Length: 81
Image (cartoon, rainbow, N blue to C red; front, top):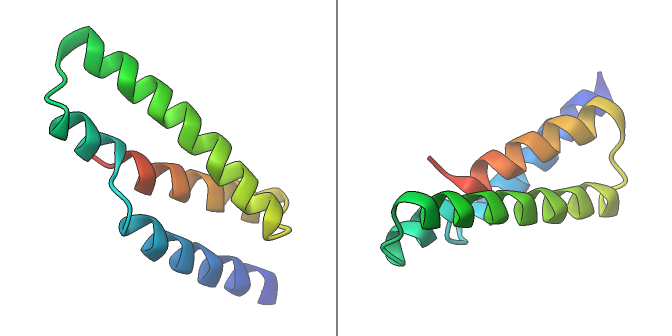
């Protein structure tokens, strides 16, 4: 139970830090991308964010469900809507 609580606290802290950065969607909008260019950019950006989030999870020594949860939330926040 303590591990789950710690994981949730880490996720919330990371989410607020990532919110300060520009999301992939915001970057695509700023660059006025559309169609295939936007799709390509979003795919690459999401792949890069997943690698970055995996690295952050490893640095925080997360594993199992906590790592998966952290990575999924991190990528979702980084990519944007």
